[in-house]
Image 1 (cartoon, protein in one colour):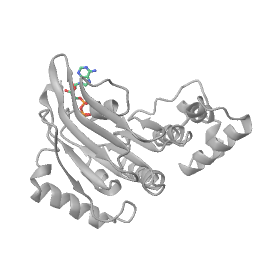
Image 2: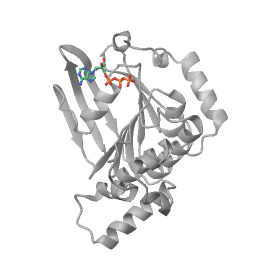
Image 3: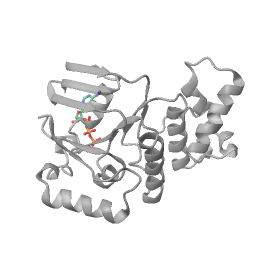
Image 4: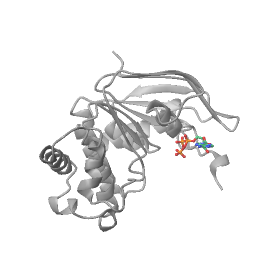
Length: 249
Ligand SMILES: Nc1ncnc2c1ncn2[C@@H]1O[C@H](COP(=O)(O)OP(=O)(O)OP(=O)(O)O)[C@@H](O)[C@H]1O
């Protein structure tokens, strides 16, 4: 069974091909990390998969019930409290005020936000707390598929790890699926079941590698050695750290 199926996806911007002939399947319970050179179209592919962008070619088939997208910027409403921002994820659900409050409190605890934080406005939160609030807003509606578009790029190393642990706990351990865009191979090795590599010249997916062990059981030494082996000996990863010079000012 496939929860997300991308078939022959193609896309271009202003006549320039960004994606061509992309095929990707994500199985139940699978968290897939998508890596590739800067400007290779990772975000565009995630946005197409999530229905935010209509592809020029190809077909997207979704077998899951509901998805949520977590972006690099938390995108919280500045005039609403943290609790109201999280509850925004429930706007399409008919719930009593009590149910709504309980759902917000439960999901806030999962991302380690204190009840006192819920009364604060986004400007009163740290960058990490804002990103946790954004994750809580995504999780509160109980999606069974999560899209992550480089969500932790702007965070410092310690905070990034905490966020990755939340992803592992909430996605991998709960049996849901996800597509996680990142340009950080260590992050991909730490959290994903499988890493898919996108070509930098619009030639589709170069290949994929299953990551040994289960997310949440990999220690730092294993992550480090796996990344070194990928970058040093596996040609699939030869260009993942390249940069598209057209996107550099
Ligand atoms: N709305 C848009 N209009 C025109 N060009 C765009 C648009 N969105 C993306 N592009 C271009 O498409 C290419 C792929 O962009 P995309 O953001 O998908 O790549 P990416 O792999 O996620 O990059 P990065 O790792 O740097 O975030 C880039 O050259 C980018 O400039």
